[in-house]
Image 1: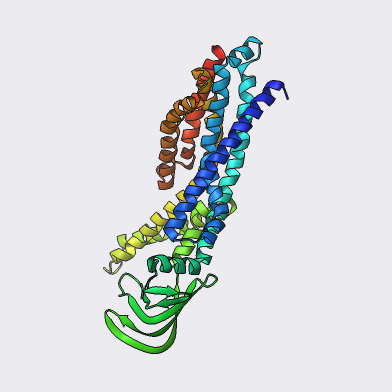
Image 2: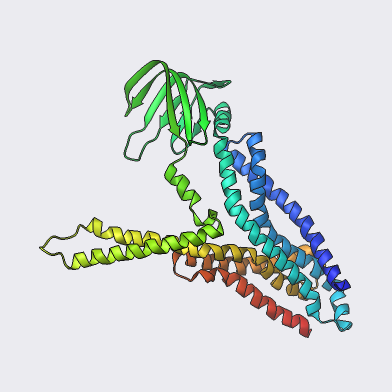
Length: 395
């Protein structure tokens, strides 16, 4: 390894690590604070969330950090005429840029792996921490706000004495068409069971109301179990392509293609039945729309499954794309003020990369564009970077 390569790698590493540490700490504090306020988390629960929030913070921080590092190092070298000195020694500029590209590639590979872990293990881990701490969270919010609510139920109390809820009113929400059930009691206690997904309520001396009418009075103690999460929603969250492991996505794509083929066959059968009703017996329009709806739902999920691996790789390799465009642009600007250089570099990337990335992502998920369209931002950044690099070589 030459002295120049060691010098560039060392400078990039120093700036990258220091900047990443500062930015990740800031993002973690903001992320944890948002979760704590939104869910009413206690200090213990908040601290258990930190490792999972940390992963997501690093995924967001690394691309901007490596761009900042490249702009800092090469902008300072160009301003100090180090680039001119290197070229005057007969050293080709590629020898100077190659270490930065190698560094960007290694960081990109690590970011791809980090995204895989953060979007699967990190997301599910954060949900598990919140769900397993539901009892602690509920008591904390009842003490501070006097109420706690979710999609399935809500609890209002006059006060909390230890674990005793004084004058609680529990509203249980059923389906949209059914009226909610209201339970009022003199006091109650609650206990969450994460393994069963149930919140167990022990109520003393109260009554049950359904549709505004008292249907049951109980002077003694009754027990009521309430699911704190919809099983369908829990399954949908765990099976969402964004939170699936890459090997699971490959298997899910095969299953989804089979379901889509079955929906197409059923649609063809329904269309044939409509065109040939037989003895004048028509097909119900609602039944005829079912295959079309199944085809639309299966097709949309298949598009998302096919897009997700491209999204993860394109997001991770954006680090390398930023190095491609950031290094030659910083050299041409020749500005020692790295904040100015970073701002000038980041603005076109912000206006160029992210709109193209979102355009390709939305189009691929909707099926309007092929899955590789997610790479549009990376491709354009690399092309622009190569054109800028040609200018650096010539001049």
